[in-house]
Image (cartoon, rainbow, N blue to C red; front, top):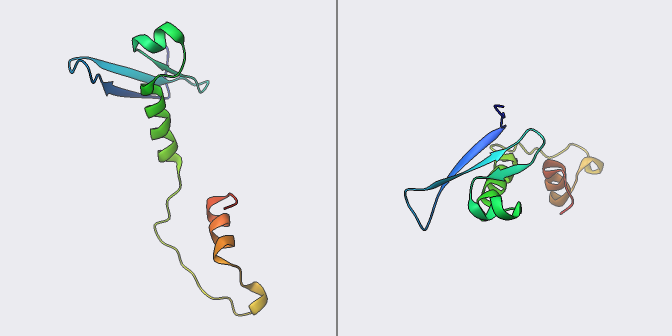
Length: 92
């Protein structure tokens, strides 16, 4: 059976430069790795953690241009903290 993956990453082995480990993201959100520690324990290995970190960084929004204009009325003004919370979608 040919299993489809949403994304795959290759990580070179630090102990053996000729080896590469593959981390795959399955459609159900599970990460799997071809390294022995993962295959033995089924617990996230350093390769999976690196792939998860890369995924998280890729999903972090970036602001390329922020157009800030002062509102005409004082009652429409908000703090910088409120602006950042609205942009990031989280309390800071």
